[in-house]
Amino acid sequence: MSLTSRAATSVVRHTARQQLPAIRQSAAVVQQQRNRADSAYDVSTNHSQFHSPFHRGTRNEQDTTVIPSFKKYRSGSETGNKVFQYFMVGAFGGLSALGAKDTVQNFLVNMSASADVLAQAKVEVDLASIPEGKNVIIKWRGKPVFIRHRTADEIKEAEDADWQKLRDPQPDDARVKKPEWLIMLGVCTHLGCVPIGEAGDFGGWFCPCHGSHYDISGRVRKGPAPLNLEVPEYDFPTDESLVIG
Picture 1 (cartoon, rainbow, N blue to C red):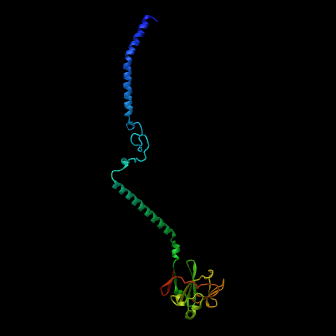
Picture 2 (picture 1 turned 120 degrees about the vertical axis):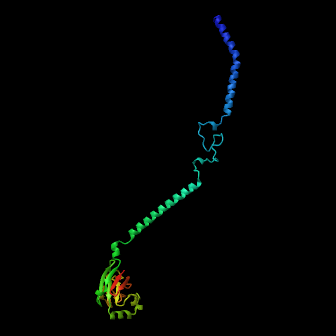
């Protein structure tokens, strides 16, 4: 190594030894500043991190006792909310009632009798066309109806019968509204056959299917039939007209 190089190296070393304490002191000051900054750092001041509403203070730990605040989601007036809720409940209640009414009304309309059935619900008969001592059979609601214009002897026979000893006890006056007119359903009470008029052992009706006999008042007197012939609902609007049903 030349004399000039040695001299330069010696000068650099001497200068470095003189500046080393100042560099160390500067490094110590920077380290102290960093330590102070780290100790004063608060997680809450770091805006780049998400803060859960369940975290309290500076600890990054979950605290389930903290209730989050929803104030910013609430409206200003509690009364306004109640009015709106009551309005919605009332509106939906009214719509539900209208829907239920319409459903029930449609159901009742569908279940009600049609026009042709209502037309057969009542039958009017001209009594002037039925002579005394004769039977007339008409159709009412799909069933035969016997209309008998009884004579005075037939009325007396029906009234004098000992009805209390019959199988189905019933006086004659409980089966007629006018003694001369006897109105009954022409259906045997045994198995639903149609009896024959002016026949049988008692001068009334006879069922040839199983041998049931009915008297001039339509009361069962003999055979397997358990009940008298049924009397339907009827009325006399005038002296010469009859309405059944």
